[in-house]
Length: 212
Image (cartoon, rainbow, N blue to C red):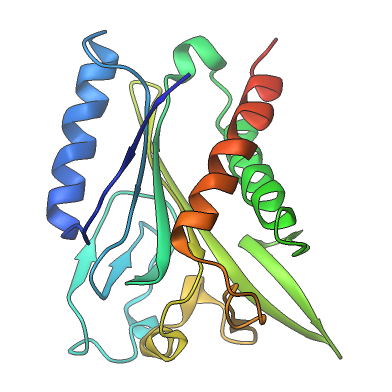
């Protein structure tokens, strides 16, 4: 199974990109193990390959980074657990759709550890929570890139970020729904709590998904 790394301080986005680029090259060369890297970023916005500039509502608020991952605009900041996942699909099955479905299931299973029902929605990337009365809020984002069938980028789960910071963008191009977090849902969850649940959920999802 992959090596797990947990950053003990927020990681600048360019530094994270450099690490992932090198680790992907090393995995492809057989010089490093698969890796799951858990971290926080300082407040920033990232633009995926499908981002529309008009969805960046306050371009001068936080640094904005273009990135090669799929998706649109995403906020990262303290209180949000980012998991960068570097797996070798050459030996796990070269099926990107299945890989993304596994990331979704990983998030769903992790949230279930806190009695939160995370759900997929057709046409909307990420994982959603039904707040009742027709309201649905996004609790986790997914953005993936693959090189030589080695994955990088990954997922982001909102534990206790400043939710108002999401107002500077149209998150993932979706304006008709909101954003939530575990603490916003009334759960006193810490990043360390979430890390335990992420580790416990990972093996079952990915071992089962790639056993064939």
